[in-house]
Image 1 (tube, helix red, strand yellow):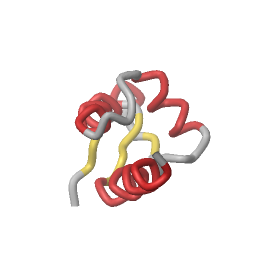
Image 2 (image 1 turned 90 degrees about the vertical axis):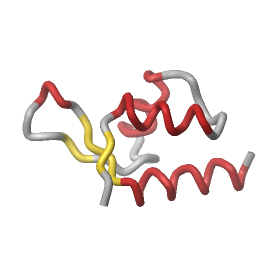
Image 3 (image 1 turned 180 degrees about the vertical axis):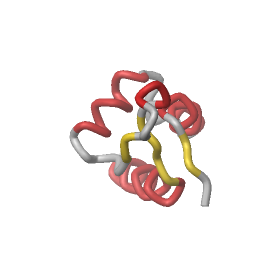
Image 4 (image 1 turned 135 degrees about the vertical axis):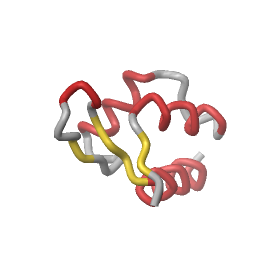
Length: 64
């Protein structure tokens, strides 16, 4: 199972033309639209599992 940080997730979301904004990704995380967990090391920020990111992408592309 792959785990992404916010910047890595942003690059994937850009490929699907969902967003270009790092602020939007963090907003979706805070709103729990993208399931993520805080890293033990605050410097690393959020960790997003690939299954959760793919689920979010499917929802966004279905409603677009």
